[in-house]
Length: 128
Image 1 (tube, rainbow, N blue to C red):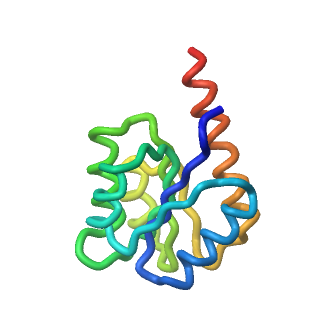
Image 2: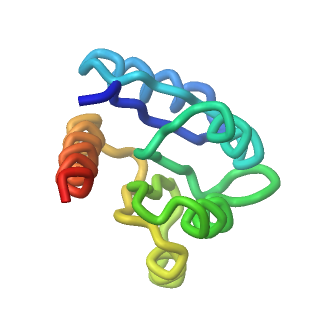
C-alpha cells in the first residue's frame, strides 16, 4: 500500500498539532493547513485522499472547501470537524459531500478509526 497521507485543515494551531501527533503516532503522514486556500495549495503539490476539515475557517469555510474538492476529487474521503453544530449545518455538510461529521472535542480514537476506515475503503475501490 502507498504512503498513508492525511490533510488536516483547522485555523487553531493547537488542533493541528494534536492531529499531527495522533496520526503520526500511527504511521500516517500528516499535512496541515490553517485555511481553505492554503489547503488547496497543499493539494496542488501532494496527492492526499483523506481529509479532516474544520467548518469554521477564515475566508472560505469548510463546507465551501468540501464542495470545491468534490467537483475534482469525487473518491476522496472528507470529514467535517467542528465545535459548532446545528441540524442545518449537518444537512449542509451532507449536501456538500462530507463523508462524516465529528463534533469537537472529539476522541482521538474516533479520528484514528475514521482514517483507518477511509484508507481501507480507498484500497477496496482501487482493487475494482
